[in-house]
Image (tube, rainbow, N blue to C red):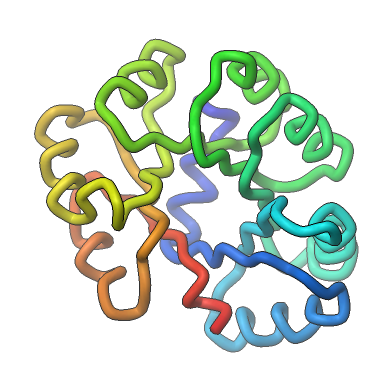
Length: 186
């Protein structure tokens, strides 16, 4: 299901979400995350150097880290991930035009949701694992508790407003398998 994203999420309860502005920062980012015993990274597609940063990080540290790509918003982004042989993909939302490319990619993926309708749309695709985004704007822990009652077979990776002060509140919930956030790289 979802090209086996469950294994990535189980093995990595903390997923650093990193936006890279300078390729010279890659080694520092790797060293910082490794020192925190983190073994994966989600590099966002938000800067002019993002695609080069993903390729370079994968080339240098792909044997040691699961390298994922975040902010997947199009079939073209999915194709970039296929071409780059990344380990997982994360989307901030769920668009019908992306469903087949995600499924066909062979790469583990987790689509973003925030509302019950979006969760139901994902369930209709046969998916059970979702990024809850942005968690801080859509109810945080309270929403996760409610969604746990409504959707007992769904597991979430909340991101957006998750930090060192609140991440444990999410991780103790039965329906939260991992959390993502930028604080891990600070």
